[in-house]
Length: 98
Image 1 (cartoon, rainbow, N blue to C red):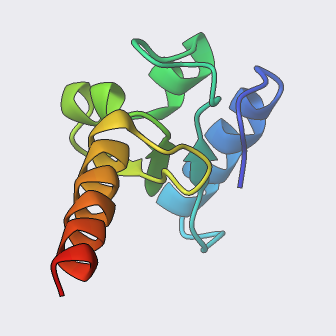
Image 2: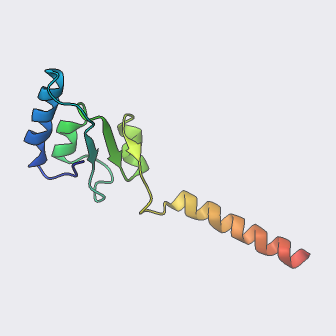
């Protein structure tokens, strides 16, 4: 599991090489910085092609990088918020009508 600093690039590259040579196993997961909304960090750009899982926090990045996975547990996106508001409003109206 690595999360952004450039210091993880050599380590991930070594693990990648060892995996190719059959001397290591396991998975490498990269979690992009929460601050990256529209584009990847340099570390993310370098590691995207070689990591097993690439995690982003924003739908904009998921659209640009289809191999990535969206983890939005920390972020309440506007579309989701609007949907929940509509449900709550509908429930309030239904309860008042009953």
